[in-house]
Image (cartoon, rainbow, N blue to C red; front, side, top):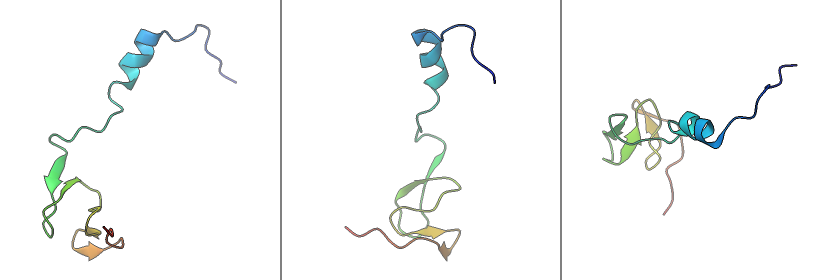
Length: 61
């Protein structure tokens, strides 16, 4: 079983985790049916459509 020889420092841990947050920049686009912002290659959280097909039940307000 692989075990790290040295403890990972807070700085190195933070540098590794810097890309873990989802950033809504170029990866975000508007949903063609409802206009809400959604990530590419993901179903819309508001209307539940993905590539023209209903895959999720629409979110209730």
